[in-house]
Image (cartoon, rainbow, N blue to C red; front, side):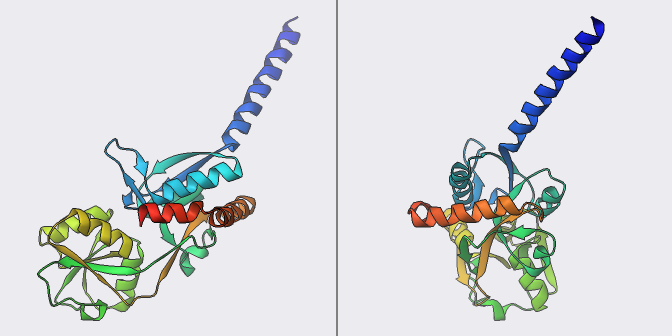
Length: 244
C-alpha cells in the first residue's frame, strides 16, 4: 500500500512539474532598460511603457506567447540573456559586430541617428567634429554614443552614466558640456527640459534590433515573421505615428 502511495505521489509530482515547465515556455522574459523614451520608459505609475514595449506586446500576440518585462541596466542586458534570466532583449540596441559575436539579432525594426544635446546658449558645439579636448562629454555606458565617441578619440574627458536621464541632469548642472544620444531620445528630453537643444550628427544611421541567445533560432525566426506581419497589416506604422 505504501509503495502504491509513493508511486501515485511521484506521478502527481511529475505531472505538476510537466505543467509548470509548459507554462514557463509560454512566458517570455523580456529585458529592457527603461531610460530610453520614447522607446522604453517608466510612466507615472512606475510601469514600463513605450514604443518597444508595445511592439514586443504585438509580436507576442502573433507568436502566441505571454511576456513579462524586466527592467535592468543597459550593460546588464546581454549578460542576463546569456544567463537565461531573460529570453529576449529589446532596448533600442544596435547589432554591432562585437555584439553579434555573443548574441543573435532580429532584422532591424527602427533606424536611428545620433544627436548631441547642449545648452541652448552654446554656440561653439555645432556638430560632432566640433567636439575636442576642451569639452567634457556625457554618454550612457555601452550605448552607440559611447562607442562612437571613444573610437573617434576626439575627447579625453568622457563621463559615462548608467542612465540617459543622468546625462541630461549632468548637462543642466554644468558637470558636462554636451551629451550624445539617439536623436528621437534627444527630442523627447529637450521637449521636457527647457534651455536645451539637440544637434543631429553625421554619424552613421544605426539600426535597432531585438536580441536573442545564439541557440534560440526558432524564436528569432518567429519574431522576424511577426515583424513582417506588423509592417504588412499597418500596426507597425500605427505605433511609429503614436510615438514619433
